[in-house]
Structures are given as C-alpha cells and as structure tokens.
Image (cartoon, rainbow over all chains, first blue to last red; front, side, top):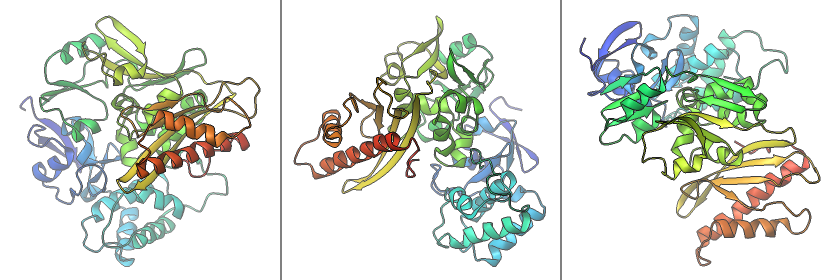
Length: 171
Length: 277
C-alpha cells in the first residue's frame, strides 16, 4: 500500500482511500467508496445529511479529515445493523411520511439509530433535542419526530420509573 | 497528506518544526479552515495523558488534548472539579460535534462563537503547552494573542483550578437578531453561592462581540443600589459604541439585561436559569 493511502473499514469492508484526493470522510465515502447514500449538504457540519457512525459514535463525515478515519470503523446508513430496530425505524419513517425528497433521510436514520442504541426509551423532548441537529426542508420535522417516537415505543424497554434516568448523560 | 502520531513530546515538536505540518485534535477546524500550505498532520492521540481527565483538589482539573466534549460532559471528575462546567460540554453544539470536537481544540481556537474560551477566562484556567524547554502552563490569552507563535509549540491540556464550594460556574448562550444579522453571545459566569459577606465578586466574561472573550470588571461589588445602571455602565465601558448606532445600543442594553438576570438568578436561588445553554 502506498504511504499516502489510509485504510478505512466502511460498512464492514476494508477500503483504501487517498486523503490528498478526498480530504474529508464524506468525500471519501461517496467518491472513493461509492457509498452515495451519504449525502453532502452544507459541508460545514450544520445539516446532518452526512451523519455516519465512526467507531460507534455519530459524527459529521464532512468535518472528519479522511486521514483521521484510518484504521477505524465507519458505519453508514447502508451498513446499519440489519435487525429489528433498523427495520422498525425504517417502517416508522415510511408510515409517518418522515421522508419526502429523501436527501436528509440517510442522516436522519443514522442519527435516530444512534439515539436508540444509546438511549432506548427517550422522551419526545429528548428526541426533539437530539434530532434537531439534522435539517429537513420537506417534512416540517413533526413527521420525523413522530417516526422516532413510534420506533422508540416499538423497540425500547418499558419506561424507566420517574427519576431513574441519568439526566447528566441522556445520550 | 500524511498523518503521524508521535508518542512523546520531542517527536511531536520535531515534526511540527517542518513547514506545512499542523496539530490536529478533533480535526473540525482543520477541515473548515484548512491552511493553504497543509501537507501533514500531527495527531496527539499517542502522547501520555492525551485522553485523560484528572482531578486533584490541589492541582485542579486537568483535561488532556484528545478528550472530546462528550467525554468531558459525562465525566464525574469534571463534575467534581468545577460545579457547572460539565453542563457546558454536555450541551455544546450537537451530538456530532461533541463526539468529534475536543475541549482543547475548542480552547485554543478562541473563535468568538466557541464556548470554551470564555469559560477558561472566567475560571482562571491555564493551557499546558509544550515547547523545546518542556511543558509549562500559560494564560490562554497569551496563546490567543499569538505571542507564542514565534516558537514551535503545541497545547497538551486545559488546566482549571479547583473551585471552592462557595463558587458556582454557569455558561449561558444567547442569540439576538439585529438589523445587521444574528449575534451569538456566550456569557460565562463564576458566581458566589448565596449572600456570603466578603466573598469575591462575580466574574462575568462575554464572548462573541470581540475577537477574544472579554471579562467585565468590578461587577456586583456594591450590594443594593441601582445594579442595572452599574451593569449598563460597565458594559458601555467594555463595549464602546457610537451613541447614534441603534443596533449597538440595543445590543448593549440587552446584554446588560442578560447579565443582570444571571447575577440575580444566582443570588436568588442558586439555580441555573432555564434559558441557559
């Protein structure tokens, strides 16, 4: 392998990318790895369309230097675990009309999945706060919030008794 | 573009002495404002203590260069060291920024909209830097103002002095829309808890209106009286504006009201006002 290339595990597959050609992870994922489900909206970390999981934590791929992703695990919306949570999340998005043009949907799904993985039974207020990091120009947001609420109710455990949630670390 | 991860200070310094090499922590600034001569990055992840958060009542709170906002925002040691500081990290930006951005990266940038710099000033924190002479602690303002740039150096930690139980830190973020556009203001406050006679006065630091955070002098030193007039006078002195500039006048008046609310809220109940960040 050439010295300037770095190896990134993308959705379970090892890929070689050149940080000089694709300086950000979002560009590398789309243009070098062909994962076009990762969208580039604002390219300054504001819109959330490029949200991916880096070593299990959600990040804006447009703000991650490709070189820093070397030897790390990247999960895009295409690589989300094929389990009941993902299935319910996608179904709720479809049933509630939470996706229209579809541009923001990959980022919304990655964010929602990251939330449910860390906090299986979030309140609606917590969902609004979490998902507010992702912009959508079609749905008006209510449908997206409704979809995540519905998914959380379908997949999460019974609600914790009042006061039992560690509010210092809701995420 | 190359990336190196030196495992000691000397190796990092040697690499940074070459033109076009820059330190990278979270990497956000490097992507948003890449230097034109960028050819390589030095990541500090392998340096001793880079991922550590340590607290000692005598030494204070020590946050290493690679500690993310997420890690600091959920750290019991941060909570133990400075009441209220954990909340700043836990609510900074959004989850993506907290997962990737580092406390030290935010601290060294001194971008007016960033949250950590005013907190450092309010808490009298220091930056631990590495130069050819070894590690030492400096006032963050010397870093922001550029007086250290003549020599090759980098920042390895933020060091916050222990906070006595009679003090409380709070960070408030406010947004104001004027005819010139939106203004984001960060207000860091180091406040006495309750009416303690002889306590040090409140420290209020305002960021967002000047290139570097500005500390308001002499606030709340005289209990009673017309506090709002006192605050307005201090703000007018700290942020002078032409009297015929309505936007600046409006901003100064609003800032005075925010500061009064912060001081009064702390004095009344000791609870963080609900509109805080």
